[in-house]
Length: 314
Image (cartoon, rainbow, N blue to C red; front, top):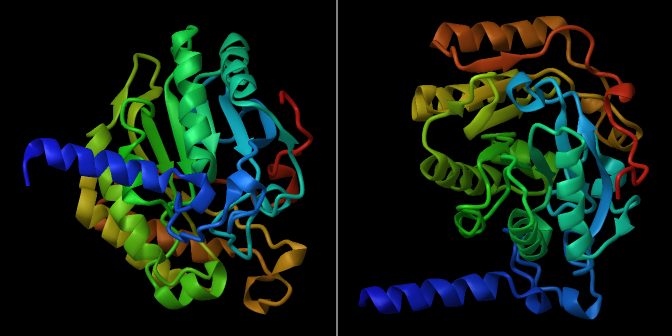
């Protein structure tokens, strides 16, 4: 196949992946006609729905900075983890419909408020609209780094399409175990999919880059939320990340798991993580040689840690 044909094939695949009349944006490939008002596996039609757009002070230090991260929380989610801390918006129970043009305005308003970056939280199921809004905002003076904050369950092609628009990737790597991924996220292929997406993110950004204030302007931070009773799988995740990427990424080990009412059918998730469980995982990471990392200290597992999804800034 010639180079020109390769390019045409890639463009055709891109159009097919972003055709919301037969939606295959995410790995679920539900093929819903979202343009006609049918909700996809994400719970959303093609109408942009945003639940909150505000300065957020609870990200990693090199993302939050002094001004706060300009987080935009999108409603709906294709992954649907049973323990989701943002369940209210992931299930589509909160949010306001807006236009692409309004989304671009929101990015600029957050910049004017002193945001350190634009932080797109669970935006994958609105990828065509988000990319268009970013293009509009950049043309109108948006200069902040763009952070893509995701549960990790993304198509590699989707990540490829964000090149030139996204500066920092903030994905989860939730599990290696297909059994855990199936039980808690109904996605036994989670690791296979997420690891391929992550590889593309790292290839795209290269090693981490920081400005003179210590803010990340380019790179990847991989988050791992430790779940109660899942220490061995968490160890496998940390080992995989460090052995695969070394110091080319940062690893954020999180202890903020918060049991919420919807986890009642999964009794093993109806408790908080113990200090001992978390310390074991952190010690394991240190023992491996992980230096580029973040840990959480103190009592983070509480509902007050979850922001109100009241359409602020929308």
